[in-house]
Image (cartoon, rainbow, N blue to C red; front, side, top):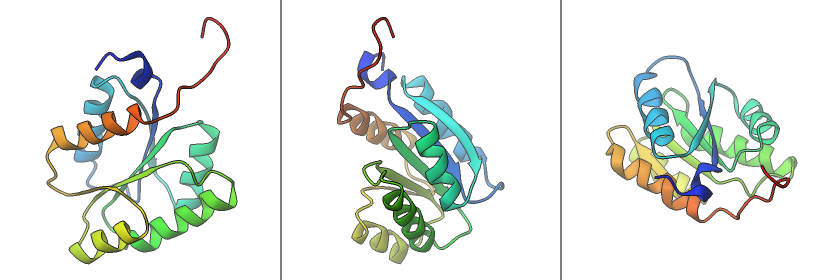
Length: 143
């Protein structure tokens, strides 16, 4: 998508571990091809994700979870974002998610949830739709 607005959307792409990274990179590439800006952060703990999201001024956090208990780490991330005044950054979670974890994430307010095997076009479309809901960024003239 070449929409000027979505090209400004910045996504922090983070993970809970270094392994199982093929899907992480495939999705990041697909989002870049869709006109979104992806900041690859790699493996991070929730505190580091929150700090990177604020430092990089991202619009969306994408968190790939393969080894951790998703509701636990996402709860920590949400608490850290709130403590830093950045609770308005939407979080999208993907990875090895069990059905009970998916339900817990939904109950926590996470709407973008993509278990392993989710169709790539659906993932990309979700991010495109979410990016269109982002408020326009106002930058300096000529930016």
